[in-house]
Length: 394
Ligand SMILES: Cc1ncc(COP(=O)(O)O)c(C=O)c1O
Image 1 (cartoon, protein in one colour):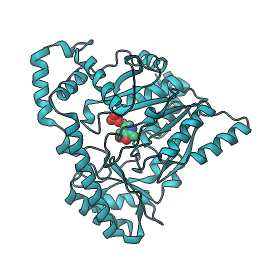
Image 2 (image 1 turned 90 degrees about the vertical axis):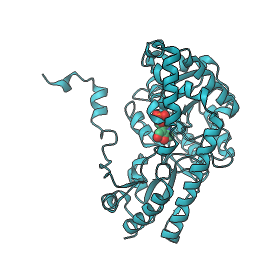
Image 3 (image 1 turned 135 degrees about the vertical axis):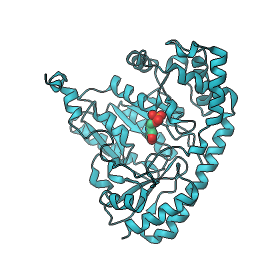
Image 4 (image 1 turned 120 degrees about the horizontal axis):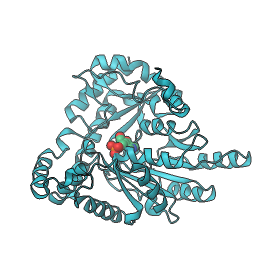
């Protein structure tokens, strides 16, 4: 038997591409991980989760362990609605779907909206897993550069005008991480947010707003595209991974009821009721606002430490956008080949993600490095930067 012969053509094609994450070498255990977009271990509320586990099972017994699950799932929907409302976004119950992390929401959105002909426009650079997800559905991907104010909407407009003039297909979807972007830490300016919403109307496309880091503001938090959208063209994706715990896999999507209905259709029983009930029990017991404040302060502090260390180590030989929130800093070191230097960096005891993996055209990312300040503590960040300097400026 030839197992491969059973795959349909679209799956064969997807499997012919590099495996997700295959480029990443194993990170030696003692390495300082400036590569990982993980929360700081001490900020994961292990104690309160242990207590919530006990409480949930005492109060509800087997209930959250069934397919239907706990009444707390509905309360989680309400919690998300209230949280969105505090940030100026409305989503009725029919306009909201809890998913297994933001990742499942991205995959479901791709699944319901994209076929092989569909064109998706993304930022350059963008979240590498999103590139992988969209590539499973279509090869028609284009990117538009960002700068310190996020997506360059003038460049997007020029692209749309040109395609429209030439009678070429227009995008179905624009994928954006407009707030505390992965990998650059930048946010779109208000002016560009208005502009992109207007372009979506003029050229009739949908916007997928990935707000995985939107809660982690160090200062002012930009208004989300979803909150500014009067036409229901924005499909909003949120996540509790970066603020509570990624292993619980709690994310959501919010948008027009027709899209939510279609996504729920394909999600069907791929639910995770226990996780939903557990996180809701936790949220009943702790102040989400206070927890968030703690995270914001901690990540802001570590971001500052990283920047000071970079300034001291690299001086004029590197530059970066100052992150307004989130987990990441995007380092530009002119003249380097970040991918080629990775093996030496791992030997020196520091990991990072070479910029090329965040681009559709990989060569654009050669001189860039994504550094995460989320996981390691201050002392490790400082040591990590010294190691980085010895490798990148060698
Ligand atoms: C921009 C962005 N979107 C989505 C995700 C996935 O989040 P989740 O853990 O909720 O699936 C990540 C995780 O790194 C991310 O950086």
